[in-house]
Amino acid sequence: MSNCLFDALWDGRQAGNGQLFVHNTADNEVASVVDDKTFFSLTARIATVFTNASVSPGDRVAVQIPKSIEALAVYIACLRVGAVFLPLNTAYTEAELAYFIGDATPQLLIMDPAKQDIGERLIPAERLLTLDDSGGGSLGAAASTANEMSGAVSREASDLAAILYTSGTTGRSKGAMLTHGNLLSNSQALLEYWQFTADDVLLHALPIFHTHGLFVASNIMLLSGGRIIFQAGFSVDALLDAMPAATSLMGVPTFYTRLLADSRFTEQAAKHMRLFISGSAPLLAETHRDFEERTGKKILERYGMTETNMNTSNPYEGERRAGTVGFALPGVDVRLVDPDTQQTVAVGEVGMLQVRGPNVFAGYWQMPEKTREELLEDGFFITGDLATIDAQGYITIVGRSKDLIISGGYNIYPKELELLVDDIPGVLESAVIGVPDADFGESVLAVVIRDGSQAADALTQESVIGSLSTKLARFKQPRAVHFADELPRNTMGKVQKNKLREQLS
Ligand code: MLC
Ligand code: AMP
Image 1 (cartoon, rainbow, N blue to C red):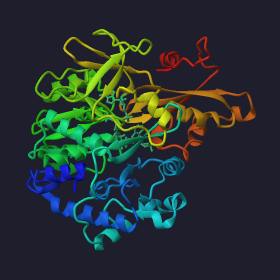
Image 2: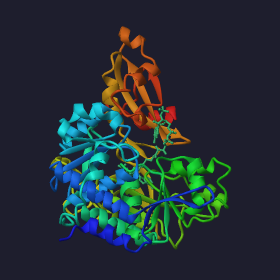
Image 3: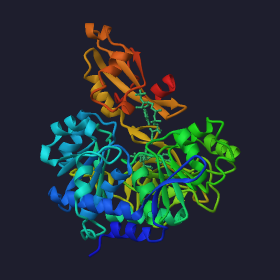
Image 4: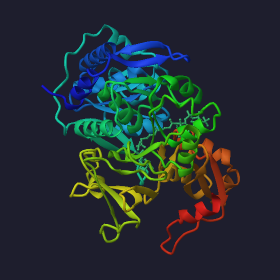
């Protein structure tokens, strides 16, 4: 029997010294260790709990739980039983969760015990379990007495391992279906490209409900046999404390701008580190250069997407060029096409970036038409990113054709907000745009046109943001609201967001 991803991760662990998670004290002593044996025993007991809860291969297991070692064990337990892991941002509101649960129809929902009441409104009680950040809750209790499942259910490369929801330009989130083969091929490619080995210690400060922290960071470390310093969230203090014991960090650009803003982050502080990787959002060339000036090291920037895992990366050995995302990864084909003619553009010209390879997802969950629109018959996926390629093959992301804001590495689709803002009494119409932000790269600005009613007179920035609070996760809510007389439109009547950005940035 073979379960391609689980078996590979398990085999990867055999290369290491048995330690998976390490916590170090400030003076670089090992404070505590979770070894492979303990971790995999936990995954095997959680797998038994899942089987007892009638989870069958192919069933979805949705989770909205805080980051913890036990939460990562839930992901591995899903692989063991052949279930499809469906992680959800811990910031999502009940209204947002209701959509995902309704769309994905999971067999099991696992929530933070603090949100048990929400869980009970979303799914029948017998399909709800809870898990807190220290392994407590009904799942933790059941797993502590469960027998260990032996091995793992057999899975093919084409079987689904996870569904990750990405917001859609129409305002409806789409579930990206990722197979065992997608996840395994990409982590193997990255492991080699970035030269991870069992000697590596990764500082893990990303959330584990997205591709970056879950698949890129966690799968690579499991495969490499290396160790993880698992932090609950991002904190400059915690990173600086742990850095002397680490070899590598994966982060979004905000990690690096915040580190640089702290005078304790020096060449000495970064001395032990062999690799700083950035992705999920554009890293300013200026940040790249400031970082090198401060530490003597060059950040390695790569580019990916939920649907495709990682596509391109700057080289490990060669020149890591500021402002670029490097070359297509081995096994991945990238082409830049003119959106009108579908012809490949010339060197230096801007084209729509399309990507093909074993990393590219299997389609959107129950959205065959959307899948056909974006995943072409020849296997290329239309990313919605605009890019150039130079004579040496370096790719630069120069913009997006999709209407998307990336704030601190989180994607926010303006359409989702505009639909909700337009529903507020007193609002005639709205346009939501991203404006430059020193910390998050971009932040959300809502431009609102009042409708002339009495309700419109009472509208304020606070009332607009307040009326979204139960509907939208905090990170998606506008940071500012601008009231205008009208929206700039082109001759087709389409709102000219570029003009708005120019006027209001
Ligand atoms: C937190 N807040 C955000 C935010 N993160 N607002 C906008 N954008 C964000 N990214 C809100 C909080 O709710 C809070 O609101 C306020 O901002 C301040 O919070 P904070 O304490 O400063 O935030 P912090 O916890 O430090 O988080 C910032 C962050 C985090 C950058 C560390 O956002 C983060 O971990 N981002 C990484 C996201 C990620 O993993 N993306 C990968 C996607 S995969 P208030 O008002 O209540 O104070 C992908 C593919 C690929 O894109 O290529 O990798
Ligand atoms: P997500 O849908 O959350 O997976 O976000 C994917 C999007 O993030 C991509 O389509 C890009 O627009 C953006 N992205 C990821 N990495 C980079 C990068 N290094 N530079 C610029 N944009 C990036």
